[in-house]
Image: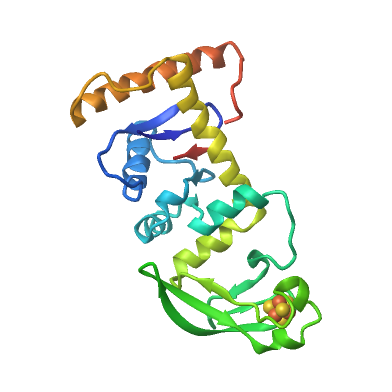
Amino acid sequence: MQLDVDYNSGIILANSVTQDPTDHHQLIPQIEQTINTIGPLPDEIAISADNGYFIKTNLQYLDNNELDGYIPNRKQAHETKKHFKTYKPFSKHNFTYNYEKNFYLCPNNEKLEYKKTYNYNNINMHQYYTNKCLNCPNQLECTGKNQIRIITDYGDVLSKRMALKMETEKGKIEFAKRKMTVEWPFGNIKENLKYTEYLTRGIKQTQVENNLISISHNIKRIHKLKQNKSGPNYQSNT
Ligand code: SF4
């Protein structure tokens, strides 16, 4: 089940069922379904989605449509959960990427030049480093004794831009909001409305059922909002 949920109200804006085993290709239809339902998205809207949606097609779509998207890569999705509250001066997000000249500037103002591209699990990884690390006063803290700090990324500009955006405080806050936004409706549907499995079979029938489930959730949510009982402080999240 795919849900696009409004952060402020907790109302489901778009839903779909799919037989696709991955989430990769569900982001664009979800956003377009939302636009069909509520009209053009407000300028200030932020769209958060989890790592399953981190593919070039989605990043390109967000960029083409000037949408403020927040999608972590796999490593960030993992690390954000573990280190959200910890400030580390030598974290990768404190390395600034220069888009024009293709290098990273480290917190000690040294250039980590592009060195090579290698393939890891069918993904091209770009590697950057500098030998200046060997004489750096921060070497121990940044990378370890006698070590050189190596920065890797996926190479393409959109992925880099997104990865860096997700390392900012705002990126982390938006990603944290996503979890709270979508998990509450899933919990409400399963625990309160008692929908733990579809009663119908076939994609068309389960889509109808999914619509009814979403409507049930939304009616309940609207009723509570009218009573001024807020749920989680709910932006659009997938
Ligand atoms: S160890 Fe290398 S990358 Fe880290 S701060 Fe020093 S020069 Fe920069």
